Structures are given as C-alpha cells and as structure tokens.
Amino acid sequence: MSTYLDSCERCGQYDVAPVAAIADGAFGIVCGYRCSGCRAVWTCSWAIVPGRTMPPEPAAANFLDRHLSALLHEQAAVNRAHKHTAKRDPA
Image (tube, rainbow, N blue to C red; front, side, top):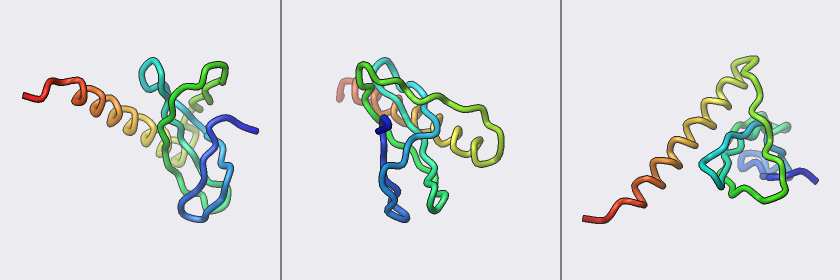
C-alpha cells in the first residue's frame, strides 16, 4: 500500500498514487496526481505523517510533468497565502 493515495474525481479510479510532491511548510506537503485511467491531473494537500516518506518531485521531462509541477507550486503558494492571512489579526 502506498502513501498519500487519492481517487480521481473524473473517472472514479481509486488508489491513485502521487507522482510528485513538494513541502508545504514544516508539517505539510502538496502531492500531485495523474490518473492512469483518464490522465487527469490534480493536487491534494496533506499533513506529513511521521515515519512516511514524502514522494519525490520529478524533473519536468515533458509538458505533462511541467504542468503538474506548476500545479504543485501554485497550490503550495495558495496554501501559504491562506496560512498567512489566517494568522493576521482581524482589524
């Protein structure tokens, strides 16, 4: 059984393993997925589970990898922005 499995919302395939991941602060990761059935790509944010290895971020070898890498970095930036605004005092 793999770590950080997700399911595809487009075709319903279960147990899709992440093909890439980046750190999202000290205690989180953003994983990137590519469905083997319909080739859909998406991201999902997870809390890091102690003792589990974070999936590696692969080199961008083709358009699909660059696209997925861009999605990962965009989602991590969105997560950081949400965390930053949540820490601000409501004035």
